[in-house]
Length: 149
Image 1 (cartoon, helix red, strand yellow):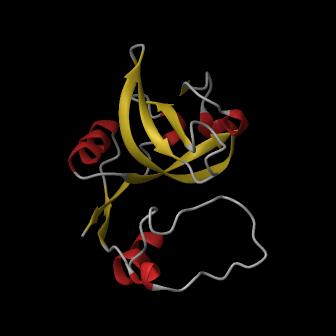
Image 2 (cartoon, rainbow, N blue to C red):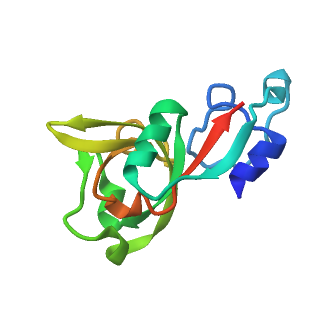
């Protein structure tokens, strides 16, 4: 698992090594002093499979990694709270790992604020809002937390 690798070897922050979401013919990482800066984590820590525990972790300790079922409607998401009127898991194109970074509510619709890995041109600058409190798309099926050292 990637989290175990990061715990052992470290990783750069997004500020130090930003993700641009584009193809490159030269996939070699640059070397230099900024790439020698690494952050380490403690974890992984499997969280209870309910959304209240997820919210408490995000509030007190920071982001969590989740896997979610991805229905075809998700690919065209632009803004608002994503809340498909069907069971994502039964109509899924597959599963996708993403990072829950916060939560809130729009017009009394609770949501998770989640960072995707598809670049800033997708969704809300690379983020999306997923309905919270109903285990939408299996958001609470396998939450994992880490603590940045």
